[in-house]
Image (cartoon, rainbow, N blue to C red; front, side, top):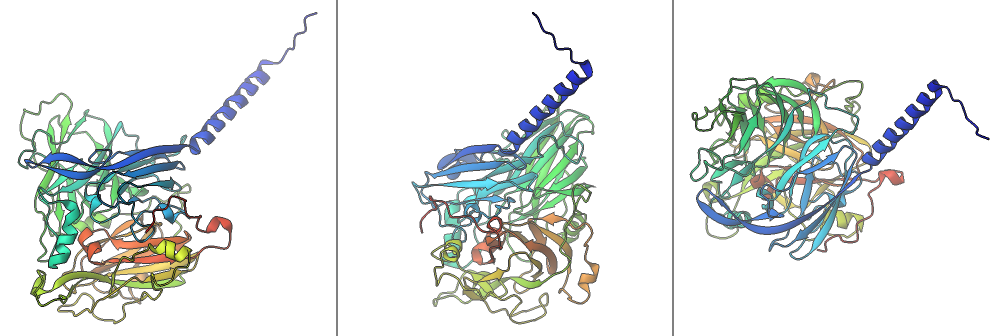
Length: 573
């Protein structure tokens, strides 16, 4: 006897719809939990640039290194194997590393270096990051060639809060020394007390470009189709200079910075500091031709030496021959045009919406003022050094020039090892003075000192530039956090007047901020990520001279607000 079950079509369609959505939901859950595994082998490889061949440190033999790609909320596991002759650590610049400072990377702050022949597994849990961040070495000067892009896409089912690009193009701005072994540069400078060797070229995706000797054929090329939009993921991996960047005859639309969305704005040029990344939309809407993409230094320090060359790539419209005509250069502001830098950065605003709230701390319980300075110190022997007036260069924050300990601070803090660091870093300059005046004496002391913050404290940090030796624009990066840039200005910060002009509505959220020459920047954040976190200038010579300090953020009251346990393969000291 045959039995038939008659189910109305409407119910069948409803059941099919439910099954489909359950499948989609399950797919999304699997995607959100995806773990990406990578192996990074640190090794030397010969590269030819500027008519000269030399060996450089690389990851997997690539320069720039591999591009990491993931979706918001994903996890990455990166096994770093050191096959080189130098110690190494890696940092995931812009990734918060929530509760996991063990994988943050700065040597002698959160770990001891990975020695030659050894390995270490980094774990990166992406949380709020979305857009372009990057990774780089965080030991000695290795990041000059050991770096790469890190792209975090919106979660599956989400979209960019901007017009969808036809294609994305990472552009890493770098630096090249023709003959110098980069790993020996800081040691040589330390011996003489003078400035480190100046680079011979800037690069775009590893190539100096059209204007340098022996470089024209390998100039990086971007082929576009007229009428289409492209997302440029721009990273400044340069060691020692901020850069102006532009594309001839094209307007750029900035949509994000440091893996955080901005309110969109149009501009003819960028000013991007070392450590910063920017997501920029390019509309290929000009006459079909070839156009130069160019970058050169913004150097605001009076009297400082710097690389004055210009790196180029070529924006090539499809169907146009490269032999047609030499591309034209874009307008780039003069090297020292601070007004151009300020005009650009003043346009940064958070992309505030119901889906993207801006949670600026309003009630502040911890106020800090850090004076950042380039200094001179007496030489330790009878011979004059090669710095100004026969002295040696140094740098400091609140008169303290940071010294790396022999055991990393995180390990010492977690395991209660005494004598490694002191908790008496000054929360304000020990001596108040006219920070941006002339002929300023500014005595400096060496030390490994930290500030301890209570969990969940609301922090306002004033970064005050000084004119002690030569004022400069300092790109300051905070590990483990993003922060809201609520104010900025020139001169000395006025505690009574300047907060009245703060932007507490839609300030930009950043991880690396430029403190203007002879000026100040105010940032706010909530200390809700327990751990040991480095704050430092991303101009490498300044960091080498001591422009670094450390926050220790205490554990919170619950298991989910405490530092995770150290991994078993943590490198020994």
